[in-house]
Image 1: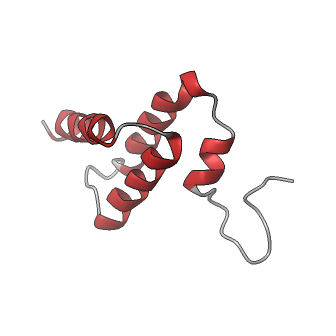
Image 2 (image 1 turned 180 degrees about the vertical axis):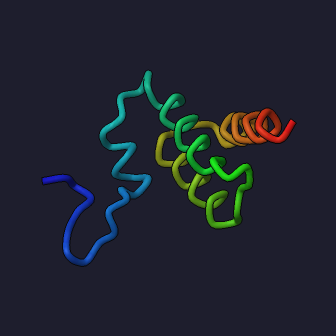
Length: 79
């Protein structure tokens, strides 16, 4: 059974659950993938931004590095 599925919880894993299953060398690519998913509509809502901040923290990424990745990917999509 997946750690993120139960009758009283949403199907999406939490940032902490994601980080718990993510080895150190793969953490930045996981963050980049999450950014890409949130930017699929070429917009970043306040709720999506908050989720990405929580994910970066759970993954142990430097906040400035995570923000730079997010902002660069957003700029590339909207250019």
